[in-house]
Length: 517
Image 1 (tube, rainbow, N blue to C red):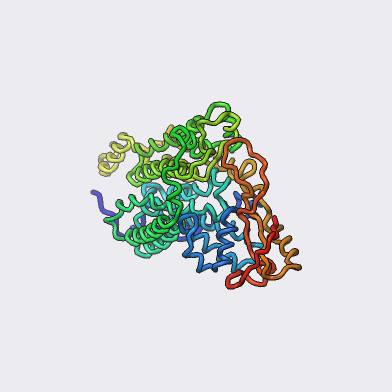
Image 2 (tube, rainbow, N blue to C red; image 1 turned 60 degrees about the vertical axis):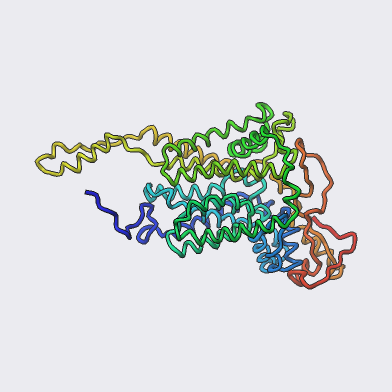
């Protein structure tokens, strides 16, 4: 006779008291994610400001103050997490440590996202043993930290940290909190994410799935508030007027680009990918998507309902987000289908590929942890043992036999090892990334500080940031003169440490403005 489990019985994943506390595991994932993300960045990259990190987040923070920047939009939407981190860095660290502080703050955001994903995957592993459940959840949480494509442009800078909050959204919206406290905590993180990434609004349809679960209402409200504010800011800007209807990327290029960024980038370095594309053709990247498609089908066939739901959401939005990003931000570098072999050697690996690439890794992990179906023989044997407890019928009880590893176990183990080797091989980038040759921030500040000894305190100077050149056309990199477009502007008083910002001070912009880096 079957008996119902006690209401307070711990779940099989061992997360209740008496087993491993959930918050301890979550804290461990956060620390591990931050350490791994920081370790993936070359030391030189940590000392380079990237794009908006200097000119916008630090620069506007000095001009308007941290609180003043929280209501300011940039490029058509709000960036709350970068604004907050930039404000903390400015007021806590000396000016020569700002670049490193920005990099670490971005990595902390990555760790926060990984931790939230870990918390929101409890229901995906309900049928696993505690050890297997922990391993699966950690694997899913760290997928976005270890995905190879992130090291080129996304990892370790505030300009692209919004991509991590975008990744977090489907996990949060699909999760059903088990207490009101956890619901409120997730609502706070959801609001922060929605106020950082305007594209999060594409996940709004997922809200329908949780309407009947009352503990999801705080998360739903936070999402709607954040997404609503982002939509209002975007509609009030000029960005959407200049983008809608400008798509020039053909369907073949969208498909080929998806193959390169979502598939090939996970298996091969940028240089190796270029050689394969030049030899085989722009469609070669699609061959590397096949393993992820197989994993997706396997989860649909063998997975339970939460696993199938997540697989469908990740696969669907991987395609939607890639196509939307490229169509709304078209440039010749995305016209993969029409490139010559010479140009394909330098095919652009885009930050827009991070969500699809991370989704592929998670699909493989889901395929590895799908419930195993018990054979009918084993079920019958178990039933026979239950009904044969009478000593007079002991001969009817099956004799215990040692189980041999099945082909399925061997296959899962092989795939798991291959996946681990894959992420370890590309743990650090093979070759230079976009910030490798950028101006070293610490050295530039030292030079500026020396120059400011003979300049007035309110005289403006500039610290160059990466990228110093911009090449939107496909093909080999061309030599261009460095520009100061992304430079961080500040007064000599800030450089010398006399004050932390220029709020309330008139900075003299005499030409030419001394530029360093």
